[in-house]
Length: 191
Image 1 (cartoon, helix red, strand yellow):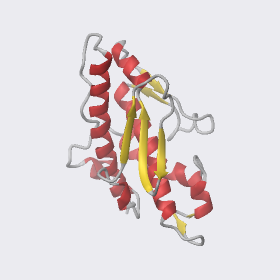
Image 2 (cartoon, rainbow, N blue to C red):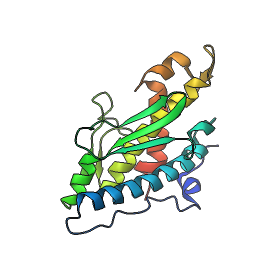
Image 3 (cartoon, one colour):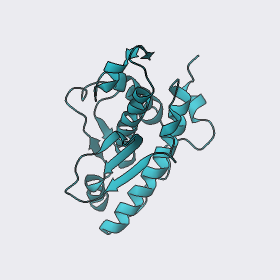
Image 4 (cartoon, rainbow, N blue to C red):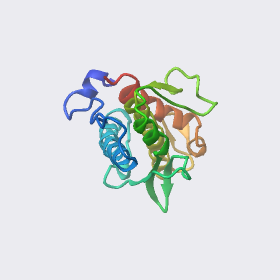
């Protein structure tokens, strides 16, 4: 039986946590630090949820095993998630979100790839900066989980009904399945 949203959110303070509370045009450094703190806590929360809803969750994608990098420079505009050197990683580009926070923006948009932007479950997100950052984290964490699962698969094995080849596609059906679970339980229905 699949856990309900209520089951998943019970205990461990798993609702959207650590609201970014800096007010009145913070400095770039203050905004960057506030967002990094939020992202660390949100990533931990999403990993707890992923362990509950993803059958066969790969232990190598625990928070302590993930290499997490934050880019705050305008030069780094792409976030990434996956596996490098045999280890899972997430790189979050935060410049846009820091600028939004500094400008006092209360409403943001997390754009998705054209392939999925209109999908009800995994498409574009409009809402608070916290909700948009949560969607970004879910997107990149899904890539890290996808690549960790793929690394443990034989050529003939199936996970969630997908074969190893389907796990190789960056935004393919296997990734969309993982991302859909995270978006459903950690972002879309979170309070």
